[in-house]
Amino acid sequence: MKRTTGTDRLPRGFRLLHAVQKEPDWPAVTAAELSAYRDRANRLAASRLLRVITGRPDPAAVIGWEEVAVADRVVRVRVYRPSPTRAAEAALPLVLHVHGGGFVGTAAQCDWMNSHLAARLSAVVVSVEHRLLAPGTPLSAGVDDGWGVLCHVLEHAARWGIDAARVAVAGESCGALIVALAAIRAGSRGLPLRAQILTNPLCDLTDTMLDYPSISRHGHGPGPSAAKLRFVRELAVPPGIDPATVSPLHAGGLGGLAPALVVVPTLDALADHGRRYAQRLRESGTPADIAEYPGAPHAFVTLPGVVPQAAAARRQITDFLRARLAGAPASQDGPARARVR
Image 1 (cartoon, rainbow, N blue to C red):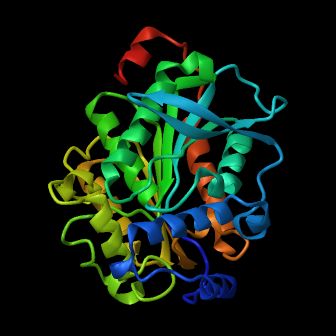
Image 2: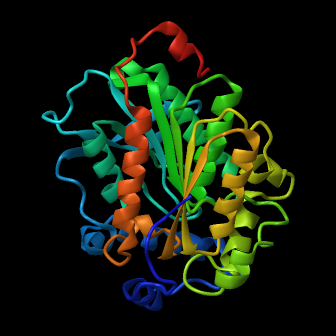
């Protein structure tokens, strides 16, 4: 386990940011109030004004929106590529990314991290603008979007300019849950992933979701409160859906998966979700490193302007991916694409 230096007090800027934000009364919020709250939050997260908090993109990356046809729908993706002067290979590694937020969130909120990965790894980063949790839109919809985009990009590797043999997945919070499930599915279908990055992951949506010491310690302050987590669970697993099917902590087949880096901010209600999942991976035979960041809150890697630990986490994530995505490009052959079907 690698630990970075830090304190056990939330950064002042993070506390001020949450002090000026007004959240709904989660147990009583209506669908209309949720929609309005989500739209406001996403506009702010994608705005240039908030770059002082969410970080400026790496100038050595090219960023743009594209659309991917997945089953019966079209999914928007935010694509990050190294500038032409940085892209030395014809076929680059792929990092499939899923943003956090659950019922809020946009790929643009992760520009600071993803543009850096594209530029410094010389990789293509594809961030999925998945369907958000809402009444009538359970978590399985976002899971399908993440997996569908991954399959589409690998099946069209030549068009995307990626090497289908050098692929990693990464996500934060609810997005980390989605990519953890993608890694499990990839393992069951013989799709070799090189790495999975799980940052402050939500891993348990069953009745035991709140039965962790970190929830008791940090479930009443800024970040994912116990009330908000109950609301997430209500949207994610409506009646008729088995919550274990979307809970990595309760999944089978965890052996032989892609090596994981689990990033755990210590002042996070979900800290023990990440710790327990890393433990389960290791017990199943999958390599899993835990990187704990004392004094860091939930979602800290998207808030480099107010959480200084974000820079160290970005370096560690970059180094982890660089080591596992290294190697000569593979040829784009039929069998590599067939494995994702």
